[in-house]
Length: 618
Image (cartoon, rainbow, N blue to C red; front, side, top):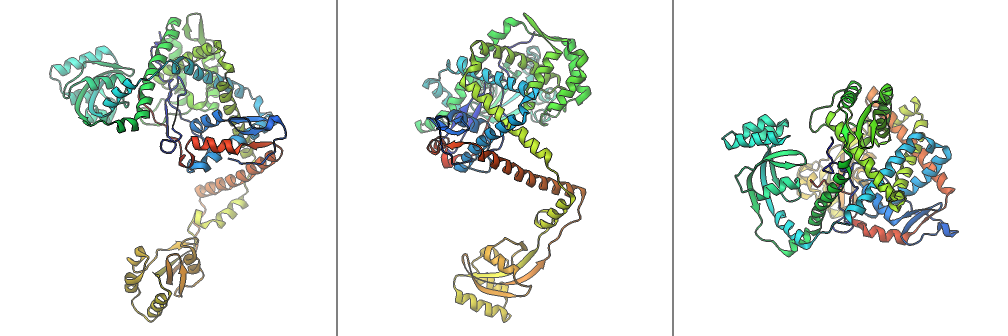
């Protein structure tokens, strides 16, 4: 029978920072493990007259697109959890770009419906999955977040631990019996490093004796961490159980900060509150899931499961055993093909629970509905087992949410709408991309026009002296032309220190470098003297000392593909922007600039930057 005593991988914790303390947000995306999905987006400040009530922004509304609102809550949630702006941008420009992207998605969504792209059955299946997921998230808020309170006393206890750093080792065991055997062996004099080398499959931990280095409060599993804080330096713990298995722990050292101040407590207050709240919420959530799932007596059928794993390994190969190898993502077409190969076995029972069952077909239908990043590794027995367990749990959590009517909750409707618009926009972009054709003539023309990108551009080299006074510059030019040692003059007089150290010599540079100085260098021949010229920082005299013609390498297959991709990208961008302009011209778009400015300031304003997501280990 499958055990559901822990929430396992369903709880998401996000630590979000925008600027310093301004705009600091924490979002929990419920009964799921950490987010991975970060996209790029942007803003459109547009002019539109609200000719009717339907297009007049009310309180908390940032923009209206043909009567469809982008409200404050949806905007903040999307920019924190699904950012659609260039991550290189910061501050207000990044926030404006995100709003522009949301507006464009609404325009593209309407256009996609006109084309009938929303009729694809896969879209409807995925939409149902997104709705169920959002319902579970809202259920989490209602049964967990509202019940949990964090007291000042709890935070102060956490603050004391936070100021204690621990250096520890551990030896891991999957079962209690195995852990007890390791503990007894250590008590009877067995060598720690030898046991660690024998037990660990991870080569790093095997080599360093299970050394975890230094850590502090909030960085380890709570049960593991509690044992470390209670254990005196140098002693070995009895077997400690965590959600990962069993551990024998040895504390090597502790460093305690003896001076604790109210200022330090205030500075770390929000971080401590997030950690303590996370752990209390996890406990409540785990208890809720256990109470819900235990009576169902869910059982995974061994033969059907083994068959499923074998078929997946036949199709996708055996999983890579390297620990840090990127998790493979099974794309829609791969899953559809896999499901098709299992058509004769769809009625085989895979899971049984009190009052019902899942067949292999039921599992495959749910697998197809999931976004690719959420799917388990089908060819890994451990990952697939956990994936099936989580899918069953999520299905029953969604059923509980539906009993509460949460499918109609504003948060759920907003999440579904955001996903739907984003998906429709992606389909339109794909359709545009599929129509782009590039000729050989366009590839060759782009190749020859961009030597700086695909080869070596034309370059020149100079030697220069920069001084503050034009009279001195003229005198130095006269002396240089008369044959005086230019390098010695540059080292003595030039204000451009990095060049002075080189005797005034510049390295070869391309057009567009060094402003007016560089422009003049390309207008003269090798050997020409130029100056005095007024430039930033003073007056310059220089001589052109070298010239290299532009160079294009032979067109290899790899280079040909690169140029073709670049031309396609340029043509796609033009086609996409043309479509956006057409759609915008036919739409009524109103942006509430005052609301936008207020919301932008609340999430960081000029200090806003790409959101950081950090796992808080449970």
